[in-house]
Length: 325
Image 1 (cartoon, rainbow, N blue to C red):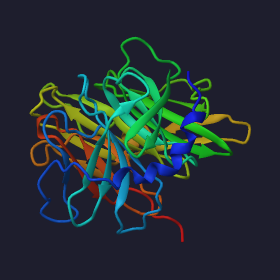
Image 2 (cartoon, helix red, strand yellow; image 1 turned 60 degrees about the horizontal axis):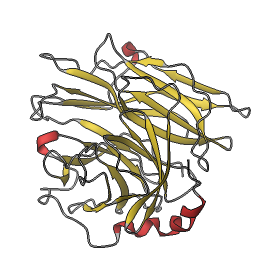
Image 3 (cartoon, rainbow, N blue to C red; image 1 turned 90 degrees about the vertical axis):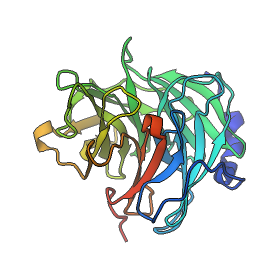
């Protein structure tokens, strides 16, 4: 693995990544608070979101990093998005530099306390460590998540900082009651990109959405971690047909904590104790949520979809705890 030291100078430039001329992908939304498009067609979905630490207050534009699960050479893997409350998002696609383009990026999160540094996870469990440059995502290394096994399919990854240590949480997506998501946690070194030993996998499944007409349920389509360790998790049903229909839900799924000695505890709520914070059904909404983010200075969260043929969209939801005054 390469050292990240060469990339440190680019950290201060990270918030400039949305300032250049954006690539607009879709028509204006009809009103604030509705789904806002960030891409069209099969290559325009949002498979992961992370907030750029720019200190936006509630009601102000929110700068985001977005990853896409594209697989072919030359297709966009990463973009910056400026989410605005009363006008279309500004989307700027960035090239992937420093390593070969990954296949199927499914999640991304910011490294706590290191503005401009991010980790993206591909479906095969490879974590890519990168820094935002004004003109590119500069990738300085990659590493597998602990416990990765052949055939695993990952869609979720999140980072938090507790007692001076960075903690990573990630999950396979699951597909049915018989195959729930497998959630793990481990300490992560943001300077070397190395993971410590992982907790044993915790099984997790959701009551909504339910599998209908042969649809699989992705019990964990994304994860983010609140400051107190609470896990915000999204789930989605998918018939594995690019036209859908899709359904989705958002949950507070449990908690991850660590003590001063670095011992990590991962506690997940059982299925019968889960109630969705938001739910989108296949008959009315037809949305496949694969991304979630919580701006630090806002009580609202943002979910993103990968709706396959219908592209990707963002929606502001009241799903995150309001900051303490």
